[in-house]
Each structure stands twice: as structure tokens, then as C-alpha cells.
Amino acid sequence: MTSDLFASSEECSDTASRIEMPDGEVLLYASLFSPREANRLFAVLQRDIQWRQERITLFGQVHKLPRLTAWYGEPDTTYSYSGITVDSMPWIPPLLMIKERIERVSKARFNSVLLNRYRDGSDSMAWHADDEPELGRNPIIGSVSLGQSRTLQMKHKTDKSARRAIALANGSFLLMQGAVQHHWLHQIAKSRRPMEERINL
Image (cartoon, rainbow, N blue to C red; front, side, top):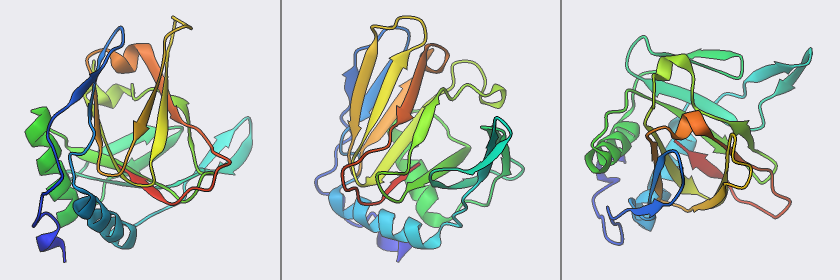
């Protein structure tokens, strides 16, 4: 099934729009993957990824992470976030296909991916920056969205008036680069509205 995931690329575009913001550069490719591609990828990843629900400790209490996650990438790649350290699982064909597409348009190289599966509106990701030491200075962070559209909220760390809200639709690709991770926080907030599943890479 994975061999024909990208057999048709109608209704997709590698045109990006720039999100104006101080202290960084954010580009949104609203339809890097066509609806057909995105829907196929969603179904394959939902089925084939080895999803886990990690646990984190906050103020001495153990909580389940409010989403499912998985970490894939090059051999011996590890990643630490929210007090969790994970070892990468080997790339699988659909992830390599996505990797090739986003590397082509971004001119960047990605050696690993953290997948997040939001099962409904109650699944979320708290305010954070992707500024872990292993990511280096001014890391390039790519974000592919499949399934339900969710809003990425962003706020500047020091300028309280600087905020952005970006709708991440099915098949979109968001590229954050420059000093974004050093100056901005981002989150996917909980929603009381009925929500279908979303997979974010």
C-alpha cells in the first residue's frame, strides 16, 4: 500500500506563505500533500506506527501524556522532552516518503521525527519551545499535519503582545526556523468542540 501513497499529487502545492513575526521565520505550506495523499498517509500511520502513551511527573504526581507519541529516525538517535527520554525506532516507508517531500521544499535535512496522535479535542500539547540541547542552536523544526485541523497558538517569550494563531489543516507543512525556538513558545490547546483524530509529525 505504501508504494502508491504519492501516486497522484493533484491539489498539492509547494508554495509557502510567510507568517510575519519578530525574532524568527515561519513558513506555511498549506497543501504540501493533496487531500488524497494526506488521507492515505493518515490511515497508514494510524495503523502502522508503534504508538505509546508516555507518563510524566509533575509536582510529584504521575500523569499520562494527553496524546499518543512515537519517535522514529536514524540509528542511535535519542530525544528528551518533558522529562522523557526515548530511543528512535527505524524509519518506515511512509515516513521516508514524507521526509523526502519536506526536505525537497525546505532544503533542510531531518534525521528524526516525533509523531503525536491527538485522539480528540481533549488531547493537547502544553506551551513549550523545541529548544532541547541536542537540537542545537536555531533548530529547523518541521511540522506535518494529517487529519483534523487544529490551531497552533504561538506567543513571544518577552513581548506579551506578540501572539499568533495558525490553522494546521490536513496535508499542511509548517516550517519554523531561525531563532523561533529561542524567542517563541507554542501549544495545541484542548478544545471542547467535537474533534476527529489528528496526527502531527
